[in-house]
Length: 108
Ligand SMILES: [Zn+2]
Image (cartoon, rainbow, N blue to C red):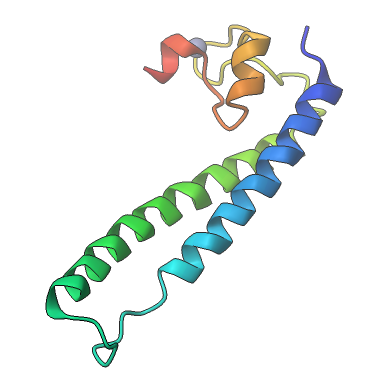
């Protein structure tokens, strides 16, 4: 049986953390202006970093979406069951990765 209170707390924590991460990424992925007093090479670096930031930002946003879905499904009787095979997801995994609706086997 899953400890729903614990899961709710964990979800709230992860949501706050992910929101902070997203805010940070958004700040860092501000447009690179050509007028910046940086050389060509570091400008290339800035552009490369921007692509990495944007990918990280997209991942973080997806994760946040899933966490929020899970949070709104806390009262679902199927909570903690794998969305694919219907078997219970071990509490440890559920708490470590509440954004994943699949058991270890199905998420592979
Ligand atoms: Zn499964």
